[in-house]
Image (cartoon, rainbow, N blue to C red; front, side, top):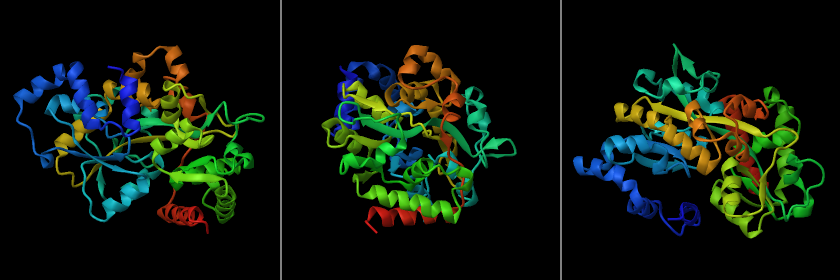
Length: 373
């Protein structure tokens, strides 16, 4: 079976993940899973932990050790942005494990909806890189609220055959008036606001001032006329880049990796002003219905198997240092990665936590801008 072809089919929505899992089983994955399934009675969905995560992470390959233990995947529920996720949980939606990013952790903790993790229940914790969990607001009495899982960059994926680059790569590429109507932008202010701030030369320690707010809002309104689509669905951006409908789009690392694997001439830009860098991870709801399975789910996300999938298929970094042992230096270089996350994170602009008032304000303003106001 051509794995890349089948992954492309999933991206194009020509093949469901369930159908893909069936194909994997047909070629041998079932050699691992079937004996487990035969020994265990299948549990009802309510008996499994629920993983509330970003679209695209709802993949069995990301949680294989959990499936190995329980014979079934956890329940997946997805969101388009972490603010959307937090809003749902504040409204009463209870899950076992969710998937925020570092700048949101203090605000998520302040809601009193989450608990610290018991690292004695996480077999992979000793292999997690400390620089990824010693983050602002993340540790309490030596225990983490968020177990870091994935890290990477938000930058620009552009068609090298269609975008006539003038000078060094820059965030100005997404404000290039030559390509009016052929620019794609992530719909979440959690990415777009911060990337615009980088373009405007705003130090993240001053991003919440009135002056910075007005400067970023003006830049995003200027960009609005050039934008063909705002979306949190990266598949939409990737398909539009592949067809040439878009010549450049704000994306995460994974889009460029996927498009390159399909032979599309693209590059993931290294903007002269710096890319936006982030660390995301797993947080456990304080009322998680399945606390033991929740810890097993977090442990699965920290496993080498999960890391290999993140790096190989998505081009993201992983928190387990041993995940990088699965790749050569040349392979990591080709993905724009390093086994030392500090080299990547320090080279870009690392998001810093802000107040709930700031997050509410930028999300409200960005919605107005996208609507043309």
